[in-house]
Image 1 (cartoon, helix red, strand yellow):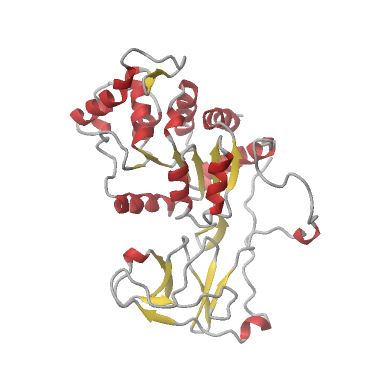
Image 2 (image 1 turned 180 degrees about the vertical axis):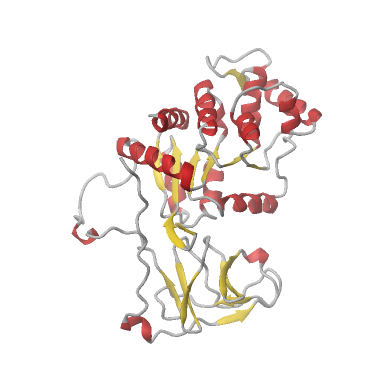
Length: 362
């Protein structure tokens, strides 16, 4: 089975309905971090701005930001990063009537109008059969390994099991991981697993709780802090396998975003929430496929900064976004927060990792 990306169908701005549409208006930001009244808030979809007789595509986007005109280009800027005087696009309409046109159907296949309007089991739930989804994902990952950038978002449950740790390590060695977003817990329990063979004090194979096991994760953090950094801890030989070990060994960047409940934390954890967001977004900007597993908060955070498209070498292509969780609530909450392009799988994340590792190797 050969994989090919769907073709993007840009709006035909030569059509008569676009000819009479106005230019988009811009007003300067009144002060740092503040947009002018009537600002246009960006979405996850391709957006075009009518400027000097041309419709300019925002080359990258994220929801709930503003569009700023800089040197003849449209840049998507977070409110907190606005500078006084930045020219901010205005308009609350998305149909071009205020010079802003949002294009959500650029990747839609032809013939959609023939689909039935009423049919059963169109949602995604624990009853859904995901065989077709897995087959597509295997092909996608093989393609993206060589032609894209695969970003993974992981919760700590992904490190609780010996098989899932080993499976994800295999994915890293195989070139299927180009970046990792997580929190203090994922890295801590993965390192704990390599250091003490437990995760939160439970044996990673038998899940048996060990005596004084509740000390293990903080003992691990303490040992890493004594070493000064995760790479220094690994260089000591204390851990010789696992997710973080393979990331460091292969040079895969990871961002560990801190939270209010963190123990320790590990030295590499971002304590400043906006510094963490900036670091996460730097990785998201490179991503063409994002796979989020077993972390509702990190998944929603990543989803809120991920558009539905990416412009690569001047070509608009889809950005694939997956949310994997055993909870229907968790995957549906992401869609409720505006990430409408997400593909959801309701399944155990540990089993998912093992399936994917085996599937891409076939």
